[in-house]
Amino acid sequence: QVQLVESGGGLVQAGGSLRLSCVASGRTFSHYAMGWFRQAPGKEREFVAAIGWSGERTYNGDSVKGRFTISRDLAKNTVTLQMNSLKPEDTAVYYCAVTYSSNWYRGQANEYAYWGQGTQVTVSS
Image 1 (spheres, rainbow, N blue to C red):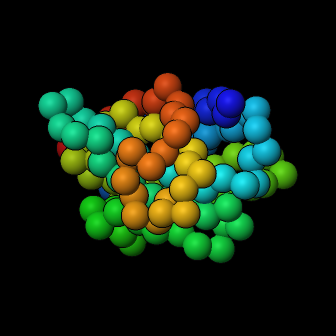
Image 2: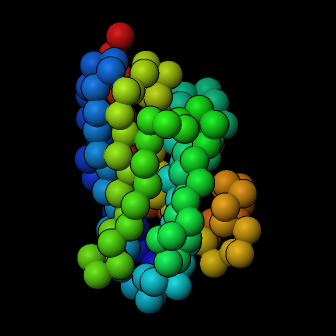
């Protein structure tokens, strides 16, 4: 089992920045790929970013490319999502997730086995 706890959400004005963190506990962290997804009210869960177990490969969803950066710290069992140039359409609950799958880079939610409880991000215009 892997337990995930997100933090860092909040309210920010458009153009601002937020930094989300996700701490993993349980199984060996370094063997998993990690991802961030988000879900806005009335919408499907959307892929945001993912990072491989070595941290060398990362992928971003089209809507956040050039604005969001995912990184991980194996020593601290932490994955971070740095969000810059935030827009009102970035408003959503953001979820951290873990996958065993070699297809982690495809950003498919059903490939991810464990999920955090989510943290709310609200961007005001």
